[in-house]
Length: 64
Image (cartoon, rainbow, N blue to C red):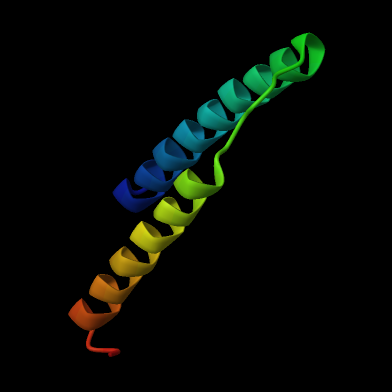
């Protein structure tokens, strides 16, 4: 096994571990019930911020 394969295996192992943690959290949320409130103002603000970041990234990549 070469170095590149070891790196890929390490990254995939980390991803699997993260997915396992997320799966456990989701199971607990479904079992106990979770209520999430999102205000319209927060959602709009987050979308505007995401748009600004995307535009900056595209400018940096020379796409705009």
